[in-house]
Image 1: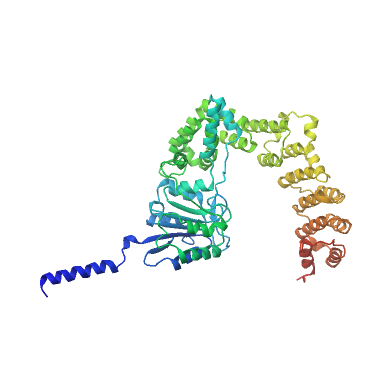
Image 2 (image 1 turned 30 degrees about the vertical axis):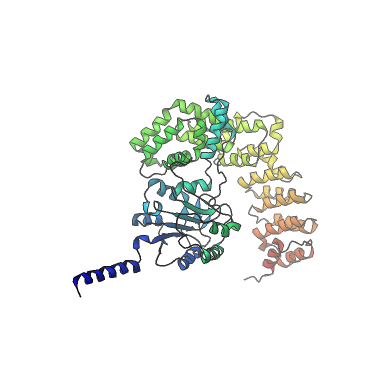
Length: 555
């Protein structure tokens, strides 16, 4: 063969080889994070051309640091598919008892903000978030009225205060959609769900329908698919894009990232907290979650590090910031926010423990003076006085007899340790006023009764009630106590045939199920339940469950 012809034949063969051998650079990698259903992953494996896509499962079962492990390996992802239940903002998790792996949003934020996982995050074209509410746009945080008031105090004109309040509300909404957009910065397409997401088998079946008619090359292209969204429309699928440099959330993302970025040491992060605390208190309020979370994460050893200690001392010496901070917290509309800010003030050295207690009592006094105490304030007071630290401060409160006589106020005072208020609340549990019974129920949820004689007296009062929702609620409250006293159980069994309320009968059965009903005569109790049971069309209930247990053989 002449040399020229041989060369031509070689080049032709080489060209043919290039055509026939797939280009490795054109292959895409689908990374999957499977903490619950594997249906979506397996369907993608079946439907996507093997020559065009590789699959990498990032979860390593039994290894808690599996995401960090994947980052260290340098896995480069073009598409990311996350499958798991989503609890509304904190974790992707499994409903299977044998699965321990989960994926926290905080860990995703840390990896994204630290730029420690460029393989997983930097080259993504599409992200699929198969979990409920993953792209829900509902704000987790809103700008309450004190935001605007604080801006006015700081000297902003009314129009500016209103504009800044709207901007802060938009930037700090902390919706699931905003958080996912910030985590997956610059990703062209994010798929997720605005409300309830489908279970794995349904999602896989819908994906299968999509691939049967999907345009070639659409999956993984970085272009949103109207067809895919349309197929998933009945189950709230929606799309968005990752935050870009020109996005209104870009600055906010950069600042939130300073709390998560591993490239910054503790002293730098404390220094950034100080920078925030020197801004308008309206903005400090909107950063409260991040400030509170990071300040609470500093352990004693970290606080003792010289540079960290110096940064914390600088905050403690900032009297101007402290003055504005205390002024703001005293004007806060939500007692729970006010209490959080008081605790944080102690973390910064702005309030000694005795000052914090005085400030909490001042807050409680303000709520009582407004005569608008709700179950939320009662629960908060019980939580704040969990260790009885606020009882000595009760004398600081000056209340009229009319204020003290209101059951919501009495429940709050009972949480603070007032024995007189507690007795009023216990009496209220047997009231005919359902609202009073509700408030007593809230108090007893936090401060259950452990004295048998007191439980007997309470049971006697409940039995004497005249039925209705209030009596059912009182019985439900009693059910939360461990009941083994025979006299109490006999009173409840005696009420069962006398009541004209199906709800009361069911509540009695529910109490007996949780109690030591084995001490009662089984055959006699079963006969009472059957003979005096009121008719209901609502189907099986607690009475049926109790009857089955009473009729079951004893071993």
